[in-house]
Structure formats: C-alpha cells, structure tokens
Length: 126
Image (tube, rainbow, N blue to C red; front, side):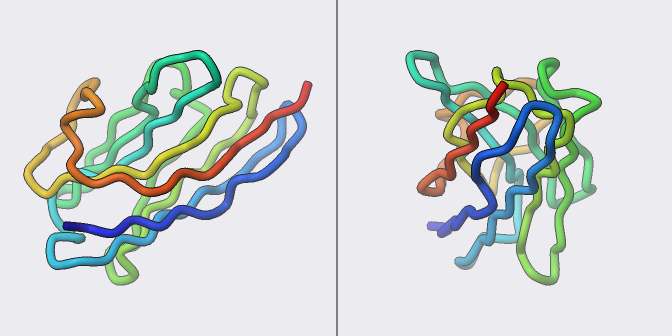
C-alpha cells in the first residue's frame, strides 16, 4: 500500500497558476504510474494527467493539454502538477493516484489506480 499526501490547492483567479504536489511513501512508491484525477461538484471523477516511473512518459486529458504539466522528482518521491491558465471549469477536488503495476498511455479508469490521496481543493474564480 502506498500513502499519498497532496498539497498546493487553493483559491486562484481565472488565468492564474497553482502547483500541486504529491508525496508518495511506501514500498512500491517509486513504481508504476502516478497521476491526478479530479472531481467537480455533481460531476464524475475524471483523469487529468499521469506519469510513468519507468520512462517519464506522460499523459494529459484533452481539457488540460497545453496548460498543465506533470513532472516528478524521483529522489523525493514527489510528483507535481503545474497548472497554468486556470479556468473556472478547473474547479474541483484534485486527487493524487498511484498504481505500481500500471503504465499509463491513454485515459485510465479510476479503478485502475490502487492508491488514492485525500484530495486537495482547487477553486478558480471568474
């Protein structure tokens, strides 16, 4: 089991930026895929982005391509999500997710990820 702790959420104006962080701990923390899902009020959870520990390849949802960047610091077992040009539609609770046996190369289902963080709230005001 991997423990995931997110930070960095908050309130920002439309067009602004935030950087989310996710620190992973546990025996399989440095393996597989790690990424972010989000859930807005009244909406289903959706995958935002994912990065593979083996080769650093990444995946982005169409809704965030060109605005969000995922990257990792393997030594710190930390994954970051840099979010630029934020829009009110980006308002959601953002969850860090990880699975040691997954390789992400397209949209993944929430059930594909074994470990979830507690979530961090992002609010983008118009």
